Image 1 (cartoon, rainbow, N blue to C red):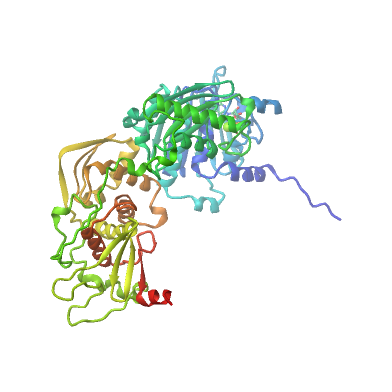
Image 2 (cartoon, protein in one colour):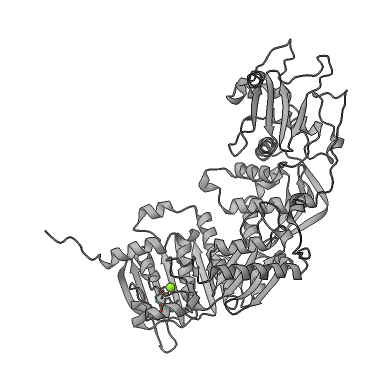
Length: 610
Ligand code: ADP
Ligand code: MG
């Protein structure tokens, strides 16, 4: 039989390796930044164009390379960082696999210029898809500059798979921040399409966090310090009251490397136990230093997943250290080990005060009239669509609602049962488990999910406000100043028009915005949260999912502003919600395609009694 096994040519092997190492432009950024750090740079410049698709360039003032090293650096398994397997147990550098440059050169156009301290002139090498196009002597400063152009030029499938420039840029910024945070003594500059996104001087860890995330974060940070035989922990956690709904600001660095560890993350969550509302996530920036021999970084080519020797002990130390910091800075209640947790009030209710159940009987109530505006402050829900009631039939042809039996009574047909068939019609509704609103209808009853229903109502309202641009704005007595990062304010600028059609009046500066008017549907205290949610959703990119800006904005807002489960609704709020829901164009589903109500016919109920 003929032998069939062949060794793959280098350029093929490199392309395969590239598949693992380089997923997107951000992966190139990570590798190049780490090489610059390993080269001992004190100033690193990152320049990208079109989300890194057109250009990624990293310029450093590190040790540079000799002519031979420059050529060798593109060979696979060529590294100056380790020379034996034992070295793997004592890693002090970011790189060690010697495959990043070879992989990148296999799938892009690379231009390297480098000079070390002893050489008078440097070297320039150009490589396209693993082929060296030219190698020349070059006059260049000490250090290294690598530009990577036309990423995936020879793998169209990968190139087409890339997301919009905005989304790719977001990923690059994430990688940049991870590297910049853990090397605060190194100065960084980062440009996109010619404009400066970050300019970070050499500074302390705390200053670096503030420079990256904006000055508003400073007051939120609580220091964490601990040193034991097996681990040294240093860094900051964010005060519980500033916890976020997104998981953005969570950073573990192990021996100077950003890592992901769901297990250790859980240790932090456990330390915050009882201090966070449901769905809120703690923020943390923690440096963990362990003996390099006790950590395995080589379990994945991107090196963000790691394995610690004694994870259980690390978990326990981390948890108690964070708990201690929370206690010491009196951000946590005094620790009480005898305390019976079963007797605790669920956190979400702690700050709410006592709400007395109200029984209101109003015989003169007329459901056809608009809800009194005087109730606006006391009830969490007020009527949105004035014409809601008249539009009740809108939903009647749709699938879910077709089971509602509808009888015409003269010229004033009703779907909802009336207590009194005279001119004073009392609509019957009640709230179930502070989660559902139940209303009786001719054929039986509807059970409405209050959150989803309100999301639908708000969604349609916001969408209309944005497109028709007639939203009412309430002027703030005292303008509100909110701090954001440059990147965030840039994002806000890009959605400014939709924001103003909603009723926001904003002055957007470099790292601060001044709010002078807000939509009439929102309260002043919620604005910061709403803007943060918007930034989060928009930075994740709407273009790729095929949503328009208006749609995404309406979705985000309805999600953050809708009444929640657990919120008590008085009778008139319940009725207003029911009316508004059925006044919507698509009452059956919330904006996230979940059912808003179910119907239960009296036949269904009768059957249960058989
Ligand atoms: P690794 O970082 O795993 O060693 P790379 O492919 O990233 O592998 O780099 C190969 C080698 O090229 C490095 O070991 C280093 O000697 C050299 N090198 C890469 N980038 C730089 C740089 N910016 N400055 C100096 N040397 C560099
Ligand atoms: Mg490297």
